[in-house]
Length: 149
Ligand code: THU
Image (cartoon, rainbow, N blue to C red; front, top):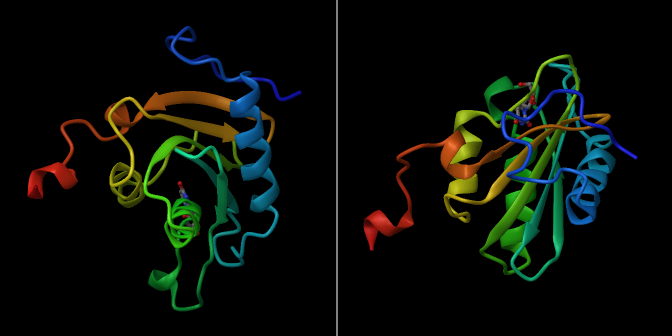
């Protein structure tokens, strides 16, 4: 059973031990093993639950032409959209190191495309979820598809 190591400022908002979140964590941790990260040596896994309940996972895929690498979140979103889904209901990312690794700025915008302000995004280490955020906390006052509607 995964344990939380860093306290969420408001642990009542989300339950990171929720079985559905655990399932998402397991998928992200598993796909992280396939990361291609020989340059950063920082493998990341991401798992998304879509509106239909299906889990889509992706890992970071680096390139010797460094800027061409893609993040784990981008790979997971690509898998979801390729399967014909357009709505993200929960995200877990898994990365190593001591710190809480949150999604990069570009991936926050990528998730925002398919999420709403209340969508939970959990930042995990290999041992389990460390911090949980809403989409709006990660990307406040964001630009979204509705602005072009
Ligand atoms: N990375 C991700 O895949 N997702 C994140 O949320 C943070 C960073 C990747 C990009 C790069 O391959 C490596 O981690 C180091 O930045």
